[in-house]
Length: 311
Image (cartoon, rainbow, N blue to C red; front, side, top):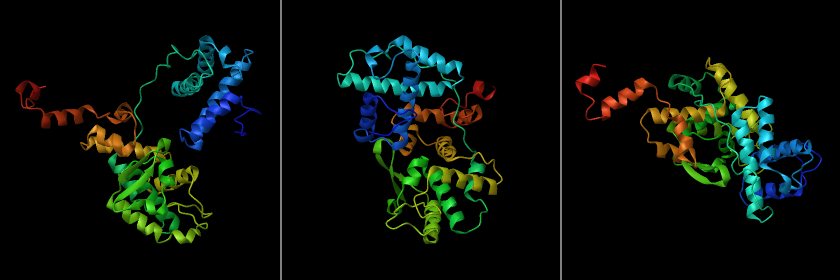
């Protein structure tokens, strides 16, 4: 791997690790770059201590803790610190697995305690107003509405939505290639299918590049990218009278929240979202007290008890 991440060179062992993530693990280019950036930042820190990832055997647990302390002093968010520590763990475990290191210096280093917060989501009325935004019914407007419907109606990550090809949507389902190149099939709503058909009827106006199979394309006829997708949602939000900070992942959060609030079971939502761990999906279970009490009243056989009713 000859590319660099922030420096003129990358230690060979880091190159080998990034190649492993790319080729064997099948991680996306963006994910591999993220790992590379984290490791490069750590290597830069080590060089201030006369160490380097060129000699990982000289990296101690104290140096890793010092790196995290340095990030903390610089005001780096705890969630970002945890991600960087995770990158280091993965790298050193890769070295251990391949007998390139005898001990893992990240062992015993605890993750920074995270601030608990719930993913930001639109309420149902806001989501519906976004889906019905009064945009100009030109090719761009039709594409933006179809994209929003797919993000909210099926709970896709933006990377998954822009990766969908024309032939991936059929008979009320969409084939999605998620993290780690894991494929899953997700339902699409009838409204989403109608939006997609309307967009496909005008897709030719963007003059698709030869052999371009992407469902969503930009003005140059090539696959829509994340930045363009963010701008598309900002336009819809403006047309719907919503704050322009509406972003693609907010629609995924909204999908999960609204599904759970409507009574969907956690494991089904986990499958729809493509989460590996149920605990990731549980972040969306922030139902308010009134909602919880309504569910209790409907479901619990003792809910009619006088003591409960008189609270």
